[in-house]
Structures are given as C-alpha cells and as structure tokens.
Image 1 (spheres, rainbow, N blue to C red):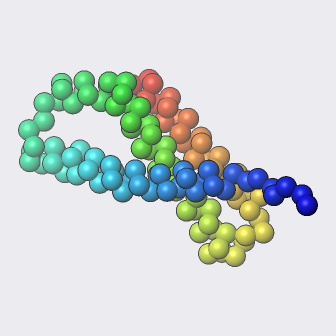
Image 2 (cartoon, one colour; image 1 turned 135 degrees about the horizontal axis):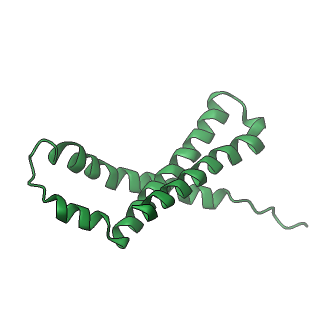
Length: 117
C-alpha cells in the first residue's frame, strides 16, 4: 500500500482561518478608530503619540501579521469562489498558485512598506 500524498491544503486552511479571525477581530476596531473616531474628534488624538506607537517595531509586526493573514484569507476564499462559482476547478493547478502568489506578493510589498516607514 502506498503512502498517502501530502498536500499543502491543511496549511492553507490554517492561513484562511487565521486571516478570517484576525480580520474579524482587529480590522473593524482599526477602521472605527482611524476612519471615524479620530477624524470626527470623538477621541482626542495626540498625533505624536500615535506616530510613536505606529513606528514601534512590535506594532509593525502585529500589523504585518494581521494584514498578511487577511491577504491569505482573501486568496483562499477567492480561489474557491472562482473554482466552484465559475465551475473551473479543473484549472486548480493554475488558479491556486496565482491566488496564493498574489497574497504572497502583497505580503512582501506590505513588509517593504512597513520596514521603510
């Protein structure tokens, strides 16, 4: 009896679920704070302190984790939406690398932006 073929599918599902959780828990708070509360003056913003917090390496690492996981969540969801919604599952060998490659490229661009900031 031959050994079962190993795939990366469990790891990709892990990235999908981690990205969904991170996006669901962190992004709404960030959007509320930086998109509504600070611009409308609901919260008093000391911009020197906010800048110091955003430039801290630990903050950059957390932001990278949240957004990179969100990109992989998107890639997984988009892959299966395209394959099942458009009934083109037979092209999985092309669709999967494109989706996850785009998420990886976005993560690299994100890392470059965060390091340069």
